[in-house]
Length: 298
Image (cartoon, rainbow, N blue to C red; front, side, top):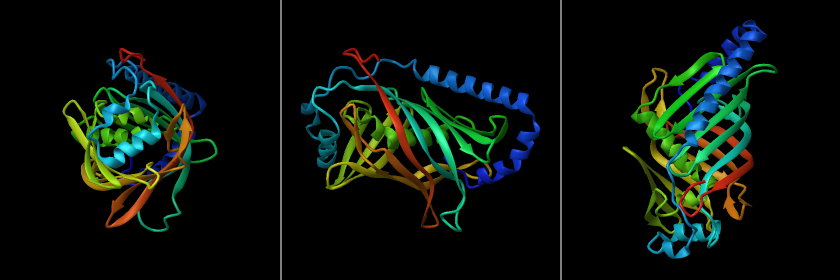
């Protein structure tokens, strides 16, 4: 999530206004923000049954070779399938282009909740703008509908995007890139299909209702997923319109959680005028899974 307008810079101008709003107004804004986040997370949890049963490697026949190597590395025969995950993150976020690539970064913490089937997530972050005031940012993709909102102190809006085809496509691409954190969601039959590219790349396609998106994943020599790229992901400009823009991310720090290999660190970037413009560098400090039963219910 990032716009050409540099909304973090605009947020700085709103910090004083937020502080002038008084403690009661700030507390009320925080409560309202939390209620909306809780509502979206509650809707996220009311999904239809997903893929049930347990993992069988025999279902890997016909997959592109790097995908089969990855799944055999990341997963274990007979393990249950993931219904959802909760991830706690910290890192730095940037909403600026050009100039010094080390400038403009602000620290953030976030909680992100996922569902595997149907695909969905709610990302709720605090980006610190000063010792007392943060920008609250929430991205969501819940039952095929996308949302994006940012507000200083959860009170003064600085970015907002309504649900629509472009926002849905961008959100589903984000879910697909982050499905490396719930790797059974990348199994054939779980809603993602794979096409061969070469020995170290494969194209993944996720479809949810009328929305279908693809990413090219890159696999390291050990079999792990190390990067993902799209030639065009919808990106909001100053006027609120979306323009397809090259986009991608890299994954680092692979560790095993509940027996599954997942990356713990990621950097995400747009490619603007031929130059990578990173805007997210984060680490997953905690990841917890819920698993399906034989009927596909959590």
